[in-house]
Length: 179
Image (cartoon, rainbow, N blue to C red; front, side, top):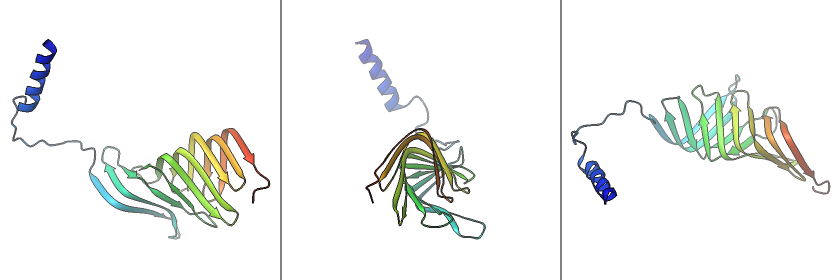
């Protein structure tokens, strides 16, 4: 009975206000979001003006507290010094306030298609330094290419140099008969 009275009082207070002016305009002094954009493309170029990195997202939100952009379902493209680019996707992305760092989170997949076949790197988080075209993770990763699968914990990737370093607990399976 006491619980029912307490709930009724709380509900009444909530419905009819706590004595404040119901017509008063509420102002938010520290918004969680100050900009929102749809179908966004962000591009970084090198000193020669050539594209070195590009991200596209159907939904981007700017957080004024830390100056970051939060991206939903971003698609990434990172150019190499020669040959095909790396392409990637993730559930979420975050670009820091200085536009030089990014964090991909949730089902991160990076792929590169060459004449020898497709190389694929998967993990749950990848932290990138955009101008350097470098990324790393301390999370479990899987790297596959035709006839090869390697699982590890942690990786460093130099996209421009086409170099991948697997850091710990590395186990692989190589199928010599695979094309």
